[in-house]
Length: 469
View: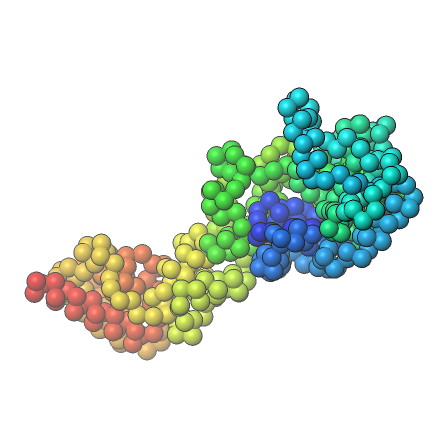
């Protein structure tokens, strides 16, 4: 049997963290079993579904690298198929027409709730044949009234639901549109889905869907219902926790591999291992190793993972994702060193790609002002001679590289008989505009000699103005 999994988001919002984790688990299981991964857009909620949300879901999946083998399929393009099978169930007596108005239904539900009963359809039209002509009707599935549904869930073990707990589900609305639970069943059947991985909020839907599958004579997939994700505060993850859309994490400077590594560990484990390559995730992944407990989102741990990936991934791969952030900050990468070289010297110093772009601006354009604190501390009158001395030594270099730059800075300090810091710190502020940068020899090597000279002159002018005032 070929394993076929699916990710089936509803395009009523963006792809968020919970959905991304579900997609990842489905994708990993298919990959680990040499199977297929299907992407399906469940857009039957026509009023709330938007093209913007569809585009955001596809963009999020592509950014994460969760490629699909089949799809994307759209439920709104399959209405004829759903209606065909509604008719089959009607003809077989496994579904029936319900002529009850929404007002009648509301009144029944209100009465049930007032009596402390579970709101449910009472089966009024289940066996009636006195159908009024020309009246609108919905079609309901004739759910078995005896027995039980048994789900051998990969995560939760054996789940049993008595059929007496389930009412007769609407499968076709009075306006002619099929309902979510029916469309899902037909799609899973037609697409050969063997394993359904989805959130625990779907557990109540599963017995209904299994009963419909059995009525159609269709195979029953295996199920794995994943627990919810909680925010840092222990409450269900929502917009109030900040970034819950996958693309917000892109915008904040996280690498997709870092987010994937973080998400895979929110429920699944393989011994004590924390960091997994994509190949390792595929090799080790098992639905049976997903825990039942809800997972709390820990932003600090995600940041730690992101730093790890910035430092350890090839600079060329980091650069592919970092370019977007430089572009967002209007930094022209053609005006400076190769981005890969900047990443190599900055990787140990930044937590996100957004921060990488922010602190690397001076490599690509002139800074407008010095950092106020750094200038106040290091661009004082006493720094004038060290700057003049190191300017001369740097200008004399014929082979510009980190070693010759280091020697020039040393020579200036020796000539003035001062410590390296007396030369290095004013030079750092002059070269970068701030008091923080990678080691000076490496930083200056990525800049052009004429840039360094101009920036030292700028610092000297600042000192002169400071003295004059």
